[in-house]
Image (cartoon, rainbow over all chains, first blue to last red):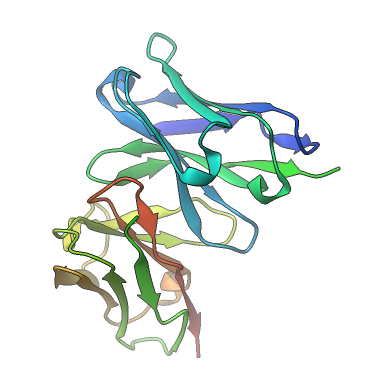
Length: 116
Length: 107
C-alpha cells in the first residue's frame, strides 16, 4: 500500500524558515517524480513544486521561486520542502504527492501557519 | 501558465441525480486532465486521469470526457457518499494547474 506521511509543520513567524519532510513507503520511491501541493484554509489546491526521480530537475510555482527548495533522499525514501522567508500567504496545508500521469497518491497533509 | 476555468463553483443535487462539472483550459491540454474528489479535512483522491480513465476503485457512476480545451466530469445517480468538492488538474505542462473546485451539496 502506498503511504506518504508528512511532518514538520507548525506555527512560524513571518520571515522565518521551516522544513517539511515526507516519508514514502509501499512503492519504489526512486522510480517516481514527487511534488508538493498546498491548500490555503477554505481555498483550492495549488501545485507548489516538483522534483524528478533522481533529484536533478526541480520546478517551482513563481510565488515560491527563490524561497522554497524541494529535494529528496532516495536512500531514505524521503521528500523534503525547505521553506525560507515565509510569508503569511504561505499559510496552508501542504500535501506530499506522487507524480505519475499527473498526481496519483497524496499524503494526509501537514499544516503550516505563518503568523506573528 | 495554463488557466483552468472550472464551473460551476457549487452544485445542489438530489440523490439519484446526474451532475456535470466542466473545466476549460486556456490552451489545448491534449487530454491530460485528472479529476479529484476531496472531502472535508481529507486529502484529495484521484478518480479519473487522462480525461476518462477510471482509477481502480472508482465507481462506474463517475465518468469523464473531452478533448482540446474543453472537458467534463459527470456523476450519474448521485449517492450520499459523493458529497464532496471536486477539482480538475491539467498535467500537460508545468506548472500543473487546478480548477477552482466545485462543491457538491445535497438538495
